[in-house]
Length: 400
Image (cartoon, rainbow, N blue to C red; front, top):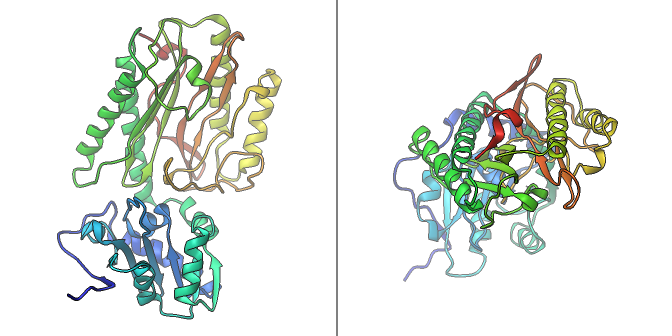
């Protein structure tokens, strides 16, 4: 029996989240950087860059996946277990590697790059074992970390990307309203979270009937569980006066959006209301600062001063916002566009960024809990556009 190292298995209709011209434009931008830096072939291994340049979002499950980009070719590399699905969901060519012998993945990549080339790789993703195999099989004349350049490219959104992100923000709002309707004393966090998740998945399927559906989720936290922004859902039952944190995360073809809101069950005490209103004030102030020409560090320092004037800065737990695009809690992050003191990136039209101040007050103190508001803003020529619609603040979010 002939046991090939790799082969092409292409069947079915191709379905992608964007038109071919969108991927061609992204690849053209990448190739300009490759030409400027002397890179002859890029070997991408991360979910976010493979999805960004090809549309294919892989499920690794212990197997390596890749995308090889040269001056003329763009080829996804996928495992035999997925058959033709990677080809149907990618722009460009696709090669399937077999597991008849170890490292057929790298033999498939070599068939595209050839040996002895200048190879671009993702220094923030490829692990030591795979980098050693890259060197062994491809025998590069030189290797260059391409990850910082690709991150900078992903930070600037195309009109098509912004349109998809806008849909995502609207879907997040749908989940928010479903969660609001499910909140009442005695219900469990998990029950409320499922109501929000189900509403979002149905809405995504209505808006994108040809998409693949996965990874949409909700973090709905109550009481002490609100102290961390990424605390998982539990079976804790809601009680009157509980502080709540609503967090909806629709995922559409690898694109992440979010809605996050502070809420209370039935009533809010005065100490909590004061903290909540202060965080809302920081949120509104922060959104007013997001405009072209402002640096991430500058925005951060101004919000820090806002909190310091109110003796609340010590309760801040992380930065004030981040970029949006191909990212999730499993993969990817455009770390060059985060609202932190150590990020000097200047905001430009076409960037998409959140404003999400959070204060955490320890248990046993007045106003205990975590307070967070989160909106998504598109940087425009003369300011920003807030594409989040669900209301924030006490007037709408004391419920149940």
